[in-house]
Length: 126
Image (cartoon, rainbow, N blue to C red; front, side, top):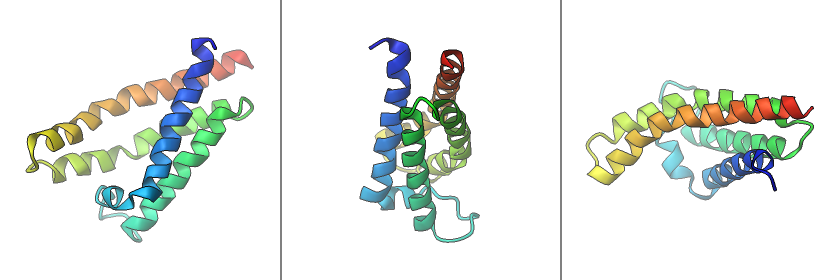
């Protein structure tokens, strides 16, 4: 399978794994939900898990790939505040946990660029 065909499937796999994790171990995600959001943290955890699963499904299907990839890029931007909250909340944790929380922040940039690249590839294939 050519790299251009693998990329959307790998991104879909990443999103599907994260989406399932929101239901399998929701407590860790609840802790990253900014308190300023209305409703319960658990509702946001489940909603973001559903969103990740829906985005993954959209990336797998060639007809919806471009729209799903653009929505994925927007999703990665949208969850950035949760990553910032995690980094702030974990500043007093042991070094490995603190490093993981801080490492998530710059990771959002390549994820957004990856999703945009998938969208461009889907447009070029259409």
